[in-house]
Every structure is written in C-alpha cells, then in structure tokens.
Length: 428
Image (cartoon, rainbow, N blue to C red; front, side, top):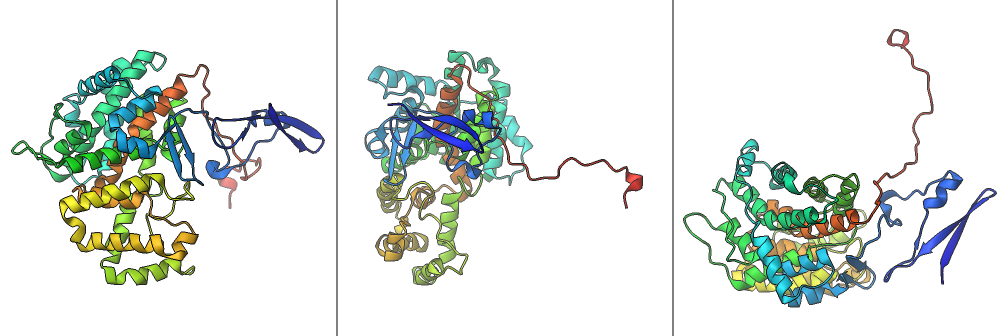
C-alpha cells in the first residue's frame, strides 16, 4: 500500500509521498514543498535522508551494522578486508575466481608513481600525517588522469582499484616521512594488512617479521572501519562527487572531513584520556568527574551518537584488543591497565549501563593501534585508509545513477534585509 503524508500551510496543502526502505524508518519525500515556497529546516541533517543507498544499514537502537545485508560480526569472523571491499563495491561476496582476480588487480596497483615521492618533500618534516594525506591523495588525479571520466564504468572501476590499492602505500609513506625513515615499497607476496604493517615498520636494512595475530588484528580494524553509512565524511564525498569531481579529489575531501576531532579523531582522544588518567588508582576520581553534571570532563570512547545499544564493532574489537595486548605483552603497562579497569567499571556500573555508555569502537581501536606500535598521530590515517573502500563504493553508487543531482542545500536566512550602500565619505 502506498503511503503518503500531507502538509497544510495557511490555506495551501501539499501531498508528500512516503518511501519505504527494505529496513529502517520510512522517509517522507519533501521535494514538492517548493510548491508552497517553503523548505525544511534540519541542522545537522538529523531527520533528513540525503540519498538512497544499498550499501550499509545501521540500527542504532538494536546495535546492528550490516554491509550489503551481512552482519559486521560475521564479516570480521569469516572474511578479510579485500573481500569486504569487493562486497561494498559490487554488492555480493566474491566467488573464488572473483576474489583471486580482485586481489591480483589490487596487487598490480599498490605502487605509486615514482614522481609522487618528491611530492612529500614539499611538506615540513613535522607536518601532521593527515595534512600530508589530504594533499597527496588529491594529487593522485594529476598522476592518474587516464581514469577520470566518471561516466565511463571502466574508469570508475580502475579508479576504485587504484585508491584501495595505493592507500596503504601512501599512509605508510606519510608515517615514514614524519619520522625521517626511507619509504618502503610494497611487497605483493604479503596480504593487504601485512603489507601495510611491512611498509610501516620494515626498513631497507631489515624486514619486520609480524605475528599472524597482529596481522589479523590489523585486518579487522580495516573491516570495522570500512563503511558506516551516511556519516560526515561519507556525505562530504557524495557532495563533492555530485559536482562531477573526479574520485581522487572526492576521497581527499572525505579525508579532510574525517580529520575533524568530532569524527575520525575519537580514538586518539580516547587514548589521550587514558594518558590523562595515568594510573589505575586515579580512575575513581575521573569516574566521579564524569558523573558530575557540573564538570566538563567526559569519558572519551564511551557511548555513540548512532548506537544507543552496544556498538557492534566494539564487540569485535574487544576480543581483538585483548588478544593483541596478550601477544605484545603490553597489557601490563600502566596505560593498558587503566584501559582494562575502566572497561570493567563501565560494563558493570549502573550509571553507565542505564545511560548505555558502553565502550565503543574508538575505545578499543585506539588501544589496539597503540599496542600494534602505531602512533596516535597515525590513527586517523589508518581510519582513512580503511574507509576509502566505503567512500569509493558510495561515490560509485551515486554517480552510477542516471541524472543524479548536484547537492544544493537551502538555508534559513537571518541576515540583514536589503540596504542602501553608503559611500565611504558619508560614513561616520
């Protein structure tokens, strides 16, 4: 049965069709409101669906995250990152033959143009890795201009492959540049996650031998950050893409949006909070501050804007985090002892339980990345690396639709009305 809503304004009335998705809330289509010469006002787009998508679904009340219908827990347990990237891009899990070809395609594009290496020399040695990444990824369009026709499906495919393949290489180069070490070329005999760790921590003098548990942990971090519906950075990618801009600069725009501390910087903030607490004996002091409504202190890494239940990604990362701490032996350090005790309190304290302030994915991913030896300045870079698969899938979905519209939000204007210009000589 077709649903509809109606809106009356003074003596005017307009019928608004209601669209139903396969999951989630119904959506009232308001495009016809222009007939009444009015628009909706929704700061932060809290009640606005800006697009139609088949890629990712979130039910925040139930703590559910689906990629193309598959639970994030099952993907983390049974899949790997490149398989998930294929799923996001093409809508189905790959067959054995498709997975083999996709891996081959990725391996053919892991290197970056050699001249891109010199691009890094234009940055200060102490520049933030995210600042470098924004610039370098945007510059890819100057090196790979043979695949910039967004109306060509083959160009879209090869651009997606190039971005997913080159992002670990670029991310590792950002890190190496920041510490003054030589860049490491990718080794295509390694898996996607292992190759990234190799480029991060090996040197021309010595190839690092990496524990399989740590490789799997890195792969799971990539999977849980691969896509997360229409968040700020994904919406930025779509908005930039709606202008017809090429995919490299659209992804660069997404990286810039992700850099905001309210978005991609949450895991770094959570780790900084643990450092601020310092030792286990100081935890009660900070718990009391968190409960005090007159204190501005907030526990970072707890609760989530979307999930009003336990973050399903956090459930996956909780186990992975403890495995990494056990393998690296870092669970005995003061920082990680604080994290473990804070986790225990939050999961058992009625104050946190009633308010559903469970540890979220940022709490566990920050601890895990730190235990893997990745500095906090690189946390958001790793996030961007993983999220590129979701960004390019969302971009591709949008530009594949005929006659997609350029994004053009409206505004509620509250400035001055028309005024007469006063010449400088007449102004007092």
